[in-house]
Length: 355
Picture (cartoon, rainbow, N blue to C red):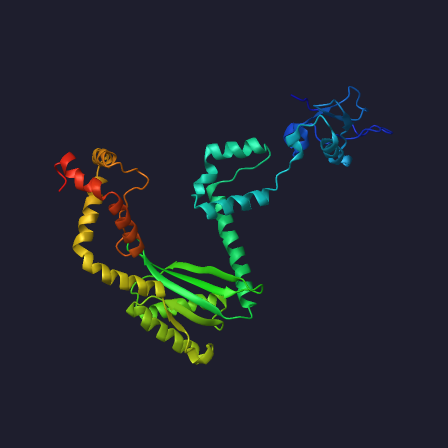
């Protein structure tokens, strides 16, 4: 522990220089992690800063600061390698925010002990942050990117095509997704999700129209819209009528909105396929029952695997249970079932509960 030293500055003609700091608690520069302060026995002797790794000494008077010490850290061959790498804390926090947004991590991820140990191992000078700090950083990054996209959209010379759809969560809350599609100045097709927001009930046409129009005004593109693609729900049909009339009154649509409403081809195709699958309704239910039964327990799966092995069926494909509203998943389910058809036929002889 260093001793406090008091010097009488009233001596005439003295060349005493005050050191940078005699108390370690007052040394804020990180150079003192690798330098030690040495004070001479005589009050007139100037204080020295000694480098711990090579023994080089420098003057440590307050008027010189620590620039000379920092320069030595950069050029000394005996300096530890990691001491030259300084952390840009702003860039570090921005990268953490991007990682959370990109991969869907929770904010508490930055507080995980193992995560912090990795960062400290890479650079001991890094300052870890809390979940509240990274939450603020994520909101700042979102605002920054939103302003950049808003500026790009306002500067477009072309029109913007919109797609929108309603989605209901497992908690029965309604959400609206609004996406913009446009050609940028380099003739590249761009698709950007503008909003994914909760829409409180009732989901009537007039309410949805006001919601979408408010979102477009917030982005400043209410006069740049060319078309909007929607599914075939009745409330969406009525909503686009309200929205088109509002745009026509503002003279914001080409050809008075003759090409404004586009029906979603994927939704139409899904309706056609679902209507056709009704012919196979009873057979589909039996297939779903068989798959649910086999996947109901590990013991059933083992018996089913034995049946497949006896029929020389290689387990290159797993069973697949479809989502009824997605016809492509129904196709995959039937394809897998037909591959293991012989195993399902043989299963009742191995499991009497399966019928």
